[in-house]
Image 1 (cartoon, rainbow, N blue to C red):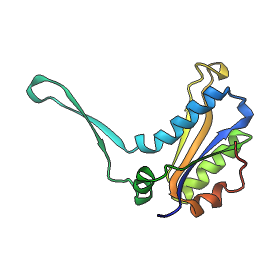
Image 2: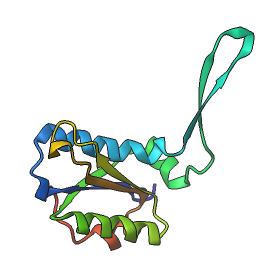
Image 3: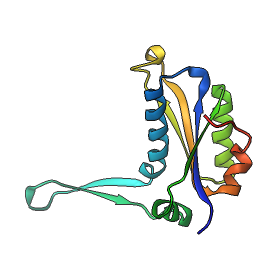
Image 4: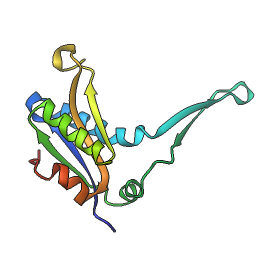
Length: 137
C-alpha cells in the first residue's frame, strides 16, 4: 500500500474554540468528496426520488485512502494569506484540495472567514512538499 494521506490546515490566528476547529476540519475533509457528487431527481410515477452519484474524477489515491487507513494530519498556519498560499500552491501542483469559508454565524461577527483547507488524499511526498514545514496543531 502506498503512503496516502490528507492534510488539513487550520488558521490558528482566529483563536477558534476546539469544537469550531473540529467542525471546520470536518467540513474541509468532506468537501474534497462532496465537490465530486451530483444530485439529481427522477420523477418516475409522480414520486420524486433523489439519487446521489459519485462522479468519475475520483483518483486512485482517493479510492485507496477511502479503503485504507484514512490517514489525516492537522497542521496550522498563522494567517489567511498563509492559508490561501498553501491552497493555491496545491492547486498549481494539481493536488486535490478544498477551501472552507465559514459563514460567520457563530463566530467572526457575521463576517465570512476562510478558516481552513484540506489537501489530498494523495501521495505523502507530493503533499509534504507543500505542507511539510507546517507545525502540527
